[in-house]
Image 1 (cartoon, rainbow, N blue to C red):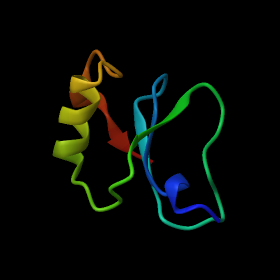
Image 2 (image 1 turned 30 degrees about the horizontal axis):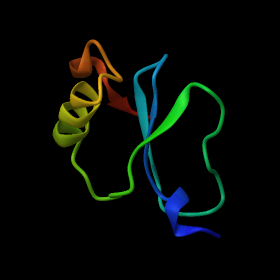
Image 3 (image 1 turned 90 degrees about the vertical axis):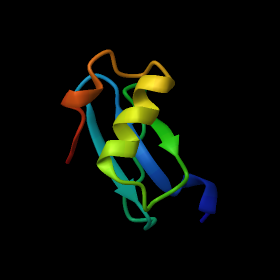
Image 4 (image 1 turned 90 degrees about the horizontal axis):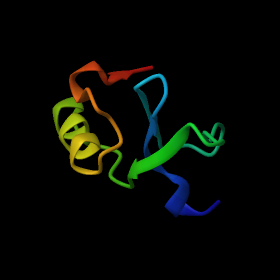
Length: 65
């Protein structure tokens, strides 16, 4: 398993994030993007990063799944 697949994934349509640090489920498809390889990021930092990368027009609506 490539460690590069681990990290925080953002579903850009549903504004949901998932912390992936196990190979059992890796999000795929056009709606899921790797936001950061850092698996220990807080939701506040995740929202800031999503706004910086222009992946969420309303970053305050981003939530964990």
